[in-house]
Length: 483
Ligand code: FRU
Image (cartoon, rainbow, N blue to C red; front, top):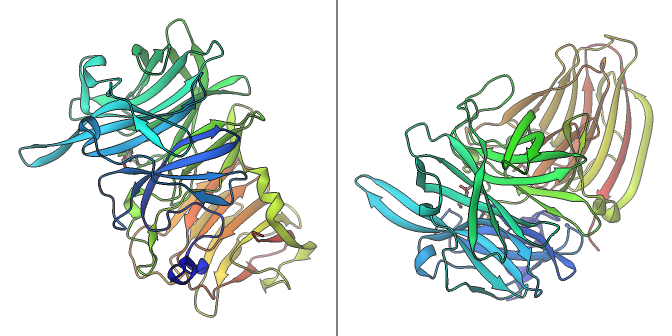
């Protein structure tokens, strides 16, 4: 049987990375090596469930078409017998691809199962990787006292101008509060590491353990990204596992980061575990898991895969805030441009040529005059019975995504809201749809909402609804097609 017969194309996203079969969580080792981009991922090939972690591996030239490589790491040595957890990649002086990851060893404490966590490396040529015999390269005995050996993971490695290596690793206090810490290390060869400092710490207001850190310079600022667990809902952050970008300054003398501003990286339902690379053309590009730990029951049982990555995003800092736009490569796969300008929306409107499951569509919404409408709704994935919606309320400046009417029978979170700056009823939404997802870039990337949608494949409709006054829209829509 051919692969096509086994896995019809329709059962996988068109341009978002998923494993062909099995479970995926965090993206790992996102890097440019030997002229192509590599994206590894937390992978359990044998079931659509989290299990002893492997590293799946794919490469791409454009972030849209993915070529699958052999599985790069499996839990087959003593320090990683329980799994190869998240990590990152760099290129060595002798042109090798160095993977740095967390090896875990399972132990049982009374009634609890725990993993002892240390940092390990593997070295390869872009296809095959050999684990370093000296693993682990950073042990839990190398970190400050009072931190947990069960929560010390997800090294993000990079190289400095002088060729030396740095990495940041997530950690937390060993007490019940599990307050997150980001540890900062240096090395001359990527193998012998020395602890420098606690780069940043959780004062107790941002969840517990901080996973998957990343640290880089961008537009004259330093950005520390962390993925805290167990966050309590407040005005600024959603509850659960969230991704946070902190923007601030860094003192190389003390190895301390000082936060000036913090924001959620994504306001949608399905987003976690960010990781970035610096491309050779100077772009800071981010990927993430388009999923959240608390909504893993939301899927189609018939699919062979679980988990996908977002469309990679170009990052910048504007007025001290993080701005995100889909990688520009997406423009190469746009087809069939459809444009409408100054269209009044009174009631429910559909537009010829504006529908589909794999599209890139920008909608500009404008009031006729200040306060001329109260609610604007945009539906995607619509058929006679179902849809997912985006509802904008200009007086509140809120945008709410809601997929509860998309045909789901699961009672997980299906709606998320985000607050926007007051633009007097004006709003721009760029919506990227793939077969199983909807990513919404708001006001040229000021905020983003990423969501999975498991709706009937036949639900391809898009409509615009205003029952509350006078509003106009401009629409520019492309189909996304791979050659
Ligand atoms: C984040 C995470 C990481 C860990 C990995 C294990 O989603 O919990 O901290 O390395 O997943 O699969």
